Length: 476
Image 1 (tube, rainbow, N blue to C red):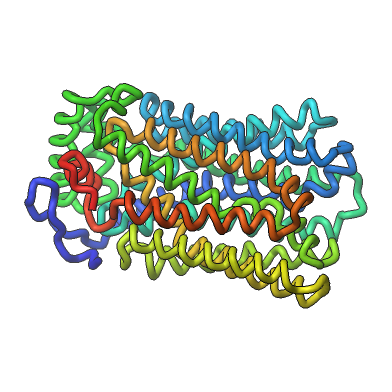
Image 2 (cartoon, one colour):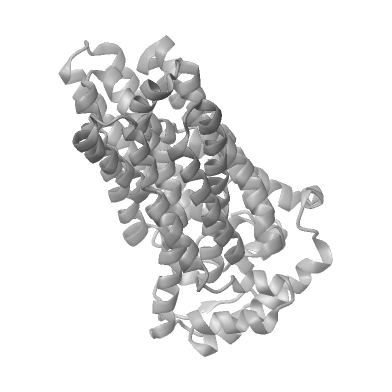
């Protein structure tokens, strides 16, 4: 979509086109600062991939406690998602992200100094709370600040930051393991790196503006206009503020912004779709691959040291896929079409992994085939699913309900993630790669059918236009 062409508002009036200027650079700066939350999300979820092996030795972890160390972060993230959604609606997006930065720092320090499991597990839960709250807040903050023409690319930067964080975790793990691997507690160095972006997020958010849509929902119309004037040319800012004000007034008369709204059929439908989409994304197994990639490649046939290095390929392909999606795909293809095609592609790769793991004999050839299929899966996941899913979730819900409904969807995402993460090493231990990827294949087929029937397209229209269409029963 051209940034210079006018678009139509929800009232049918053409909005003035976006024009270049300092406001565009200001918006880009806001996106960079806010996506430090995504970077922390990625690093803190990816670092366990390489830190777990030395941590097992130092803390005396068993198979069960190994799963607990990984999964407790995800349980904390589930709590952080639902609480963070409420914080978004009550405190605002800016203040929530500032608080989240402090929680990231506290959780990081707790993990670094943990002498035993009794300290490590609470620290992982605290860190997970920050991850969950950030996963709810950053996409909403960016979507509400972005103009319709750039919403996909701006909101999608958070997912790019997540996979960059995971890739950095894999690279830093490999460097630290090879340079200081002989040190006791080398995993503490790996965890400590996350303190740096936490400080950057805190300092940066102190200077960032609040979401104009949240300000309007609280009756602070003059403040909202001042924020929009920072990130839009003046005529566009004034036209947009009028559109958001009109819809906010209608919402305030009919919605409470909580559980009671689920009695409204159209709201209940989009919340079900949001929760289903979030769970389907996790049921691809993407985070099992990102958390346990090293162990998975060892199971495939690589040595422990070779698996640690080969796993970097997952991080590199994840960043490449996200970047291509963000800069060349996300705003050029309907969101619904991209997501459904993405599930078809990833499910097909799962089937190929099952075949390779079943028919190929143990050996280096099998290991390399499974590595190629895994990185292909990760690439397709990032190209067609992760960025579009996060962007779509930030667009689906009405203004008054956005924090709550986003929090509920991400709660479902993190609970599914936690269950899979805890079960992954157990299932692989019992059934090998064939069993776990067969599960991903079957669930992938179910997800394609569900999304084909239920998922509306959210691209090409303003957030206000989407809300009016859904309220009128139009879920195309």
